Structures are given as C-alpha cells and as structure tokens.
Amino acid sequence: MKEGERQVTVPDRRGDLFSPDCPTRQLLDRIGDKWTSMVIKVLAERHPETVRFADLRRAMPGISHKMLSQTLRKLAADGLVTRRVDDTLPPSVHYGLTSLGRSLEEPLAGLREWAESHMAEIDDHRVSSEPHAS
Image 1 (cartoon, rainbow, N blue to C red):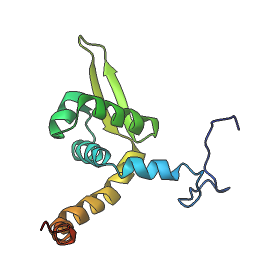
Image 2: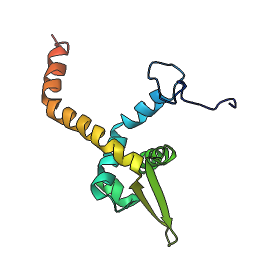
Image 3: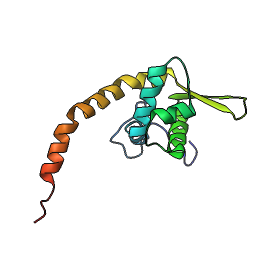
Image 4: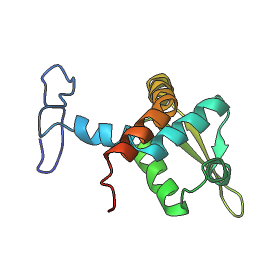
C-alpha cells in the first residue's frame, strides 16, 4: 500500500466505524450530509432518466453551485452517481444513480422520514432546553 492510500481496515473488506483509520467514517459523513440525501432523492425520483445539473440545483433550494458541484463530484468518486457530459455549447452535464447509489435511497428515505416525522418533537426539546433570558 502506498503512503496516503486508504483501505478498509477489516480483512474481509467490510468497514469498521470504530476503527479510527477506516474510511467508513468519511463515507458516513458524506451520506449523512443533507445535500447528499437531497441529491439521492431527486435522482432516485427521476431514475432511470438522468438529471441535468441546472435541474438538480432548481430541485434543491438553498444549495449553491459550488456545493452541488462538490457533492456530485464526491458521489461520483464513490461510485454512487454517474456523470455524462454532452458535447453541446454550453456543455450539458447529466447525472444519474448507479446501482450502488440506488441501493442507498431506501435507507436515506427512512432517515429523511424519521427526521421529518420527529422534527416537531425535537424542536420542542430544543426550545425547552434553551436557557431562559431573565
């Protein structure tokens, strides 16, 4: 293994969240990100069709061009998203989910559903735990 290379830390190639050197932690950071969850949801809803960059951005209010680009680049590097550039002026860039990316939609959908269903309760706890101004 070359210096700076990462590898899964368990011999059977399964990640180990509790190993400080395992890239599983970075992967969980990425897939736990709100923008990743939104990208996966939008692409899953349009699957098997691809989605143009501009359409993705319109479907995700609040995301900047830079953040969407970074998120898509990382998801493509992880093998979760495909990227196709059409030779047009200006170039048209399309994104879609790989089979690995599609396998992530169900667990993320469950997490999104849990967050949306429990947000009022969480918000109540946050408000009740705030220090009261005197």
